Amino acid sequence: MGEFDLEAFKASFASDKNAAVNDDLWKIFEETDAWSLWRCVYDYAEDNESVDATKEIVTSFMKNTESVKGQIFGVMHVLEPSLEVEGLFLCKGADPEFLFSANEDTSWFTWSQLGPSLNDGVKKEVTGLWAADGDYNGKKIAHTQSV
Image 1 (cartoon, rainbow, N blue to C red):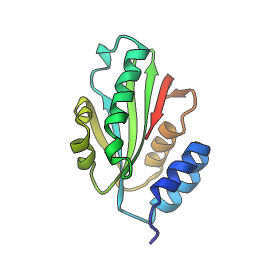
Image 2: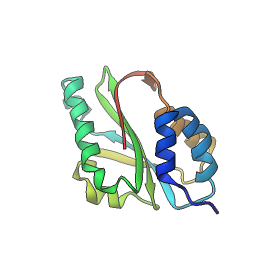
Image 3: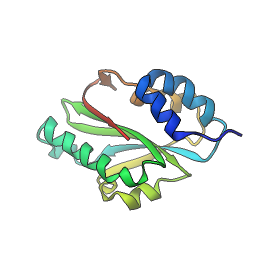
Image 4: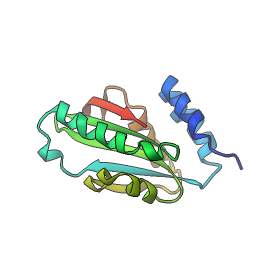
């Protein structure tokens, strides 16, 4: 069984997100059960007043996640016109409790696990969010950050 190299995946994603998600991730991920996928949706989108203010929510979240960046990979999008924030995180281990402990901002989001089996629906969701270019689920992407 191969060991998933998170840093190599992050470097691959930075240079070509489509190839990283469609090729690199599934080759290694299917060989290990040491990682889990978690989707998050910001619970207070109706309170967001501008794209810039909503970007700050994502920036703060990512900054507060720095202490565990060696155990996660995640992408978050600010979507227009609704100013929703949606993200998807790959976490080392079966649950993201270490992330919740490290980042109090996680309590502002609803979290749901994708999988644990990597069926075509899960792969489509991961590819759709991580490799999104311009829009996601019919909404314009106003801002994206990854960790």
